[in-house]
Length: 135
Image 1 (cartoon, rainbow, N blue to C red):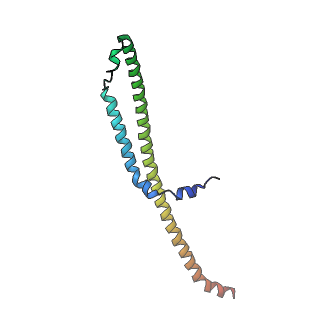
Image 2 (cartoon, one colour; image 1 turned 180 degrees about the horizontal axis):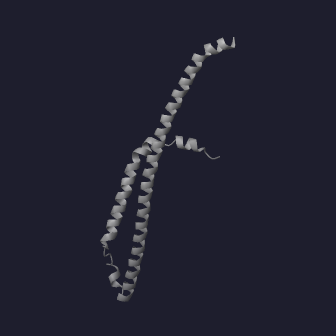
Image 3 (cartoon, rainbow, N blue to C red; image 1 turned 90 degrees about the horizontal axis):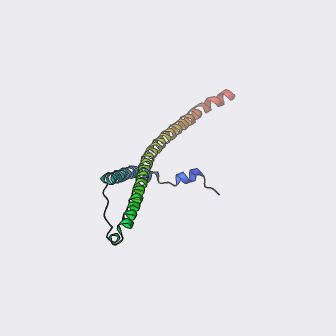
């Protein structure tokens, strides 16, 4: 049986979500900058100590394959970093909009309560006149 959305959303600690959204967005930005900086360096470590014993043709072929795999992984990492950054920014915007909506609902609730009190007082004030009119 699916849970109603109201129950799910009422169990979310919105104050914590709103408080942590800027931290998440900053973390995503820092991650993206760090990944971008590493990609621009173009530095690759030389971990070919064990491979030097192999013959040169085999070594150069394996090295080319490793470099191609590293380029592929780096491009995937950059794409993932862009996605994480975009999701972090969208999350921050969503949380800001939810916070604005929450404040709007709170103001409207207070306005509705004030209107209900005013209507109740007006009804109480008109009851004696209504009874005189009906009698």
